[in-house]
Length: 160
Length: 257
Image (tube, rainbow over the protein chains, first blue to last red):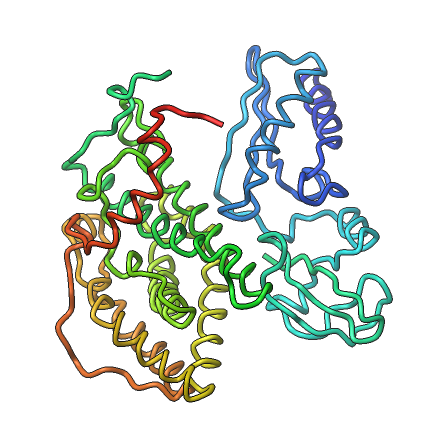
């Protein structure tokens, strides 16, 4: 049975699809799996989120952006709750999200490269003749690579 | 402007879970702060980014621990008041993390010693009966795995590198080894929180030995070990670190930006 509250919850999930990750704006918080749950209380909407990395500096901004978009959509009492357990994993990233990442020029997480090593497929020319430059990239979630074929440097979104 | 007397956290508590949580938070904060000083000064761009990424991970962990400690303390304590308004004697970090950055080799060695310890500690902590401590450790463990791998590779590269880099790693061992023993000597709050750090020492030494062997570096003979950090008796270094870290909140109490 579809109740009024499940319809409302679905509507909020839909609204949150507009909230982009500030570091990788091509991904939404839904693509990333950051939003874990939405709960409706008497007069309050509670959004439960989980951080990607312990020190991800984008989390405060993400929480604020979620609040703002819900305010814009007429919800006045909003509570953002951060939970750490279960710990976020790239397994929660949507397939849609992985496609968007590649299109954006970032290699998507790949189970074959749980530990970053040479050979992650270049998102630009699709060659696997690539080398790892550093396990740490421009943000906590990425490693830095270079393609030996097209010579372009690129980011790899690490498995986590 | 907020009234500082109400945000000042309690100085001493007999609640050992709070003390233990603060100890974990302080370890990560101080090492994170130290590593952050490399920002813009790393030997090459990729490694500048690596050490500051590690710094960010550590500060993130410390925030999680401070937030939890603040919730246990109540009384208007916040993660910020715990980091910015406690004095040197109230910090419970181990002495190792407050040792100076020195050269790149010394920073690497400090990170290696600490990350191997932290990896084992969090491995234990994720089964802890306190759910919040367990979930913070679980969250951080994947990050620490990277820190161990990265610092191990650098110890090997520099130890088994040139005569100069080898010598610098020997100097780093000399500077830091006597601060490694404290990690495995339990403070009361560790004992009472059900974490036996002493049992981690053999595994720690095993991992250090494997990497040192590949790095052609010697394990020092048994020697006197410095202690005190866990109970607030620090080396002179911590005072300088806190002066820098806490400057803004001390000078402009309650400042926000």
